[in-house]
Length: 437
Image (cartoon, rainbow, N blue to C red; front, side):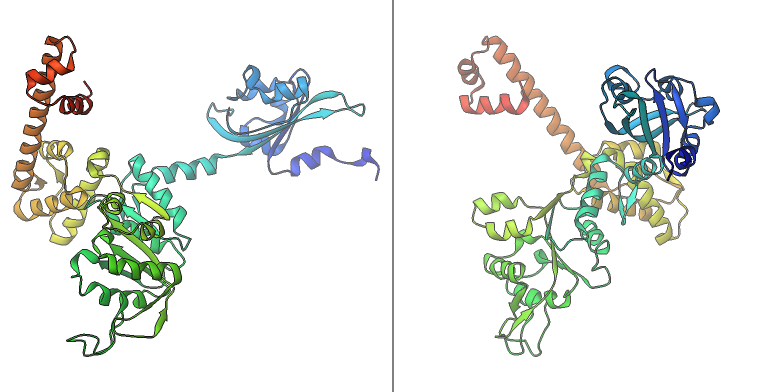
């Protein structure tokens, strides 16, 4: 084939990415149709212009300019985080690759750049980051966005998950989200709150029992693991089970097998285990209350949920969510929350987390009669709790101030200060560390 018969312009225009070339003075020499579409400039407008003057890219500056490095040193380049400005003045995220253009003698005669439009990808990322509700979990705080990413990452796999967090932070919702995003979504999701089961019943509930295994066992009973075969079992409050049951649970995790209480037959199951706890299991291991080998089997993929007090900007979103839900449940047309009630709930500490907020809104629906949730409609216990927290905060502030005054009187001598305060020197050091004096 005669090289002169090749239609280079046709080839460039058939490429889906934007392509343009420059000479050694950075003047644009070719500009394909995809580049026109991305930038908004026609080829006739672009050709002859300096590329950095036309596109005003975020990388078009000194040593950061990849094209400058190409035409000067022949250095190839690639970047995924570049912004150019289109004909209408709007920023366009692009991914770029640059390489030198050489003549037959190998000398640099210009540069070649490929632009890949990243607007759809950036938009998808932005939508994902701003998700207010994810699999029935409500929250747009950056900590919750990170939780959503963890859920999506672990859901497709068989790995065990340990969800940690205070009571009322939504651990069960996270477990459900993992299950329903996995390939086990069409199989059972079996919940077990081990804290509600007596030590004599928990083994039978988990692994089942044979007829006659104990007094009252009149029939054979399938355990929760059998019911969750090919699906997911959620073991809530895992830190509450006995060491004896922990060893049998470890066997299921390691080998996928168990025996029913009173039985001799070994049963095989394929069950994904998601566990949750509000306890510090590492401390429980040190105190001999939890097996370390079971912990490491469960803690393959840990997820720690933040308490509500650490994601305050989610409180109005959660309030709206609960008002909408209770409007439907109670068949009442509440329009929202009064300003003083919202201010109180924004400043409240939430020892019971999201569950406490939900209960407070439900209480207000039952008690209140107006179009809005009023401050007086909220549970009295919340005001008592708030008063206690305020008083404790005041006492701590006073103690910190008193220690600072005594230390100043003693010229920073901690031994003298401890004596004047009537406390041990070690206690004083602890207070200094606690109050960051």
